[in-house]
Length: 195
Image (tube, rainbow, N blue to C red; front, top):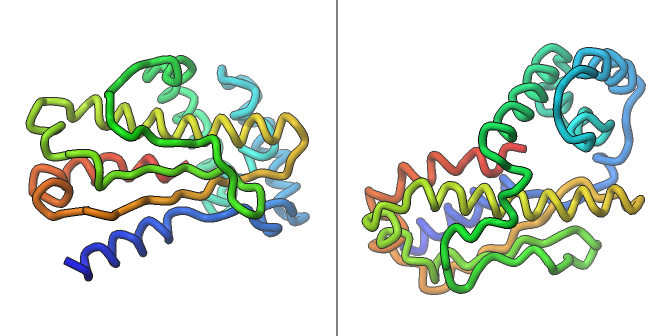
C-alpha cells in the first residue's frame, strides 16, 4: 500500500511543475519558430490567449520545436475547447464532491496552487453510480480553473507559466481509489495534465 501511494505521489509530482525562469526565456531558435507558428495559426478561431506567445511557445516546447505539430496541437485544442464548451465550464455544477478542489491559494514563489483531496472522494462509488463522464468533466473543470488563474496572472503582467498541484492522500485506500473500475478513469484523465 505504501509503495502504491509513493508511486502515485511521484507520478503526480513528475506531471506537475512550478514556474521557473527557463519558461520565461525564449531562445533565438524558438523566436524564429514562433514567427512561423503565429503565421500558421493566425486564422484559428479561439480565445486570444490560445494564440498568444506564451501558449504558442508552450506548444512548440511540447512538440520539441516541430512547428507543424505545434500548429496542429493549437488547432486540436481550439476544436476540443469548442466541442466541450470549455468557456462555460467554470459556471457548471458538475458534482458535489466534498471538499471541492481549490485554486485560490499560492505557492511561496507566487505560482497558483491547485489543492485537491482525492482520498476523501469515493471515486469507486461515483463510478458505480454511473458518474464516469461527470468525473472526467470535473477533472476538466479543475484544470480549466487552474489555467484561468494563469491567464489572469499573465494578463496582469505576471510571469506565471504553470501551476503547482497538491494532493492530500491521507486515508487513500485501494478499495475506493485504486479499484479495477477506477483505472480506466485515471487513464482517461491523464490528458488533464497534458496542456
